[in-house]
Image (cartoon, rainbow, N blue to C red; front, side):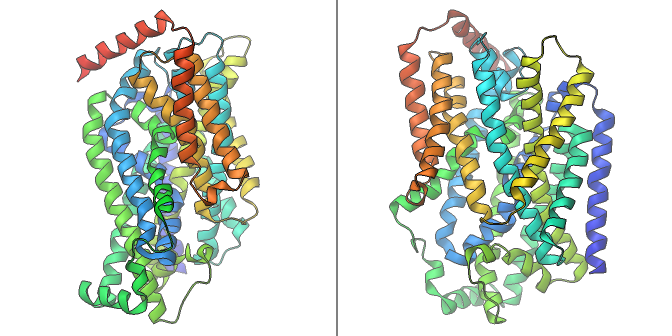
Amino acid sequence: MSYMMISFILYLLLMLWIGWYGYKKTVNHADYALGGRALSPATAALSAGASDMSGWLMLGLPGSMYWMGLSAGWMAVGLMIGAYLNWLYLAPRLRTFTEVANNSITIPSFLENRFADRAKMLRMMSGVIIILFFTMYVSATMVAGGTVFTTILDVNYHTGLWIVAGVTIFYTFFGGFLAVSWTDVVQGAIMLLALVLVPIVLILNLNGPTETITAVQTLDPKLLDIWRGTSVVGVISLLAWGLGYFGQPHIIVRFMAMRTAKDAKPGRRIGMTWMIISMIGAMISGLLGHVYLSSRGISFDSKEEAERVFVLLGDILFHPLITGFIFCAIIAAVMSTISSQLLVTSSSLTEDLYKVLRQRTPSEKELVYIGRAAVVAVAVVALLFAWEQNKTILDLVGHAWAGFGAAFGPLMLLSLYWKRMTKWGALAGMVVGAVTVIAWVFAGLDKQLYEIVPGFIASSVAIYIVSLCTKKDETVTEGFHTFLRVFKEEK
């Protein structure tokens, strides 16, 4: 336990130091919210990946592979395809258009400037949706953090929540976007190393690749059945997770923060390499972990318990100092996502609600203070939601992921590619997508088909029909042509 605590304390001190360093580099609100648009391709890619995966990569995915076998891999395939298309089609255009559109530093402000929405309806509505779904998302990620502390250190679940929330709030509060991005790079590297190390040691303990496959088949041949426990509709639901990428503010904000649109190409290569290796490592850990733990007489009785498989493997397979490192990797996955989500929510509260509702134009110093206060406020609310550990991590994250994907996915894509789109179409798509997801979940239909599918379709249809039925704004069309001209020049 002492060795594990040494690893963990060193990790926490590093995160706090990065937060302090980011604080020294933050001058104004634009720095705090978007890092001055100065991210390198590697930083943008690793930051996007680390903030994307969260505790799901280290807990939810291995747990699903343990419980279902290869059939749980359909989701990973969908996510990898979605992430690639997001980098390919959305990243470069969004980087250019957000700067052309009055140097927008948040998604809501981009929508307002893109559609010349003087009434600020788009900005306010999108800000409310971001706050709503991110509060749920942050609470889900905090559940992951509390679970890790309970499993490894035998610390009370609520104590674990306080530790995760406290450290993350500190470096996000002080360092802003730069600290969050830099900590993401470190956390992403730690996660990658752990997800490579555990599968390799598992295979060695199972006497090599050939013996490993034989052991899986001997334990349960259905673990290698990609159709186990699913159907065509089930596979569609799992693959549909990839649709969510186009609408995740905490991920696409990294595209906005890149130095130029040209950085999207090397960023895509780095990001996808990291993602593919990490996800394969998580899948192998869950699948082979089932075999290895069974040989030791250890099993899980529920999907929720199975989410602890990666944690338990680290505890059994390695020296406590290395176990501490793996523990840090799981905490890193949790903290990287919490910090990114807190910052986006804070930016939305500050830039898209406070700044709009303020009677006078606030100073840069005031905006930074408000942004930091918003970080604390959102974290406290999310902590309250996470206090009762009564749902699986995958379910909680799934609803928030679908909400963002349906509300913003079609909206972001069409706003970057379709010049005929109007502000009324944008507003309709956003509202219809969010409402469809919420209604689908409350009706219990998410058990048959993942809610992002009807939400994404309904949002797309609403944008198309309402845009064609409303008058186009020549100012908006001119702005779109200006963006295309600048984009072609940058390419």
